[in-house]
Length: 317
Length: 317
Image (cartoon, rainbow over all chains, first blue to last red; front, side):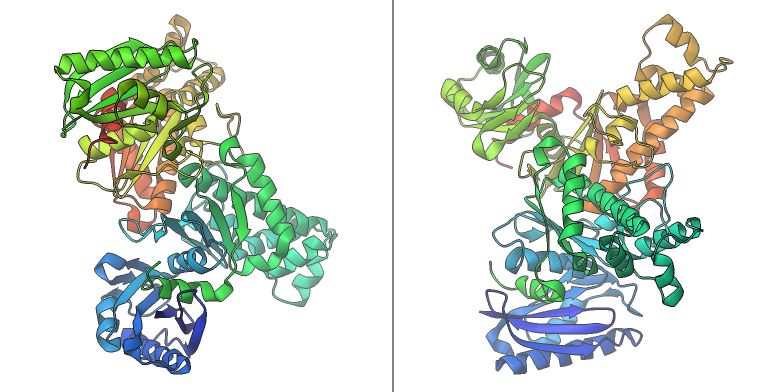
């Protein structure tokens, strides 16, 4: 039993034909024509799908179906992409039917972070776990929730938007969503960089080595992590605050859903085991006794989580 | 088809035999021997159960079973009450088997707030809704989450502990759970009273009418609400902050679970439609556009939610 996964990203489309274990037997990739409208994206998805199917040496009709992860708000039960802000023209697109007709296959849709959560649950760090929450940590923070092995979609397709849970009321930082005090504003890569610039402005005697980096090139989150592990006092403080904010977001999930497992995915996982230990230790301090020992781990599938999770939607468990 | 519900509270045990619509056809009540151990509580539950069954004019074997709501941490799948802090001696009690043997009936357990959420979902404000979240607003704040018509229990029985989600990091108020910055610390009745005393200490010219109340009697949350509706500036400010904190907690739920409906239950519902309007309006400001219009309502069943929800666990939907 094989299925096709399509991960429609803002810059590229990745496809894979995967078997029941999630192993890819064929892969494809195309650039996303993000500004050229729905039709152009559909054609690019079909091209990338064709590459994966050919590489697998299969015919379409040998597949159980295709799953598509979409970077936007999706209503899977209606087969609808409600909106996808980074893709021009994507408003209320009946993508399931469009792709099902073109592929001649059963098609299922999901939000991309939700698909990634399903991928990790079925084939990655969450194998044998039925209830988990995935944080996708990049420039922004997204997420996906798996309950009893299935994606929690929500009434409006907004289940798992856990980067935009609020953790600060009295002195909230502004967030990319134009609101204030979200986890993303504190623990997203953009938040880390903003906080670093603020701290540098206050460190007028230039004790921190971050100054040299910022004078040499555009400051990025990984610079802050690297210098923190080198012992730079200012970088360490920023990373500690990042871990604290993320731990607050995780604690809120533990007190709401009490999942078996919390996974962290995305660029921040490159920060390595020391950051993970910091986050775990802060969750241990912040969470109620009964959930304090809930496993918090890095995800395992990297950028394959989305495409394999998309395929998992049409593979029987 | 009739079922028995038992609501084991910290001060009283309420029982009801309910029909498939949730209507009680018999009720019972006993004082909870909270300090006398498990065995005494079991006997009191059996007595209260007998009263309800007699009043219904039924024999035990005509019931489909009994559900029990317990004020503590419950693992329903194991039939276990892990702990119930307000009841002496309740640690790892296999209550399902104990009660099933004594009643000769199928028995199911739930946390009391979770049972109340199920009661509202099946028979109350959440009829025809499959996904809802209930906040129980009293001295403290608890909650229950219904996903696809079922209680979300969580891996450790801590699902729906939404009063202890964190909404403030930089200047957090202490909470009854010995942690800091929880919704409960801001929007629980105890939090309201504490905030009122702080505000009175600062209002040294005694402009607020709350001073008179506090000098006359023990200040309670309902005093603050009453004076807020009378236009007292200080009471209004405290209630606005309460609504803001509760709206933050609700917003976090909307961005995590995206339920169809959020219900508010408990003493605070006596604050009436104006408070509800304030909360709704603040959720409207704080929540992401896509979930901003999610219904926020008062629960309907009052103190019957727990006992009917308990019964609902053994009534087929």
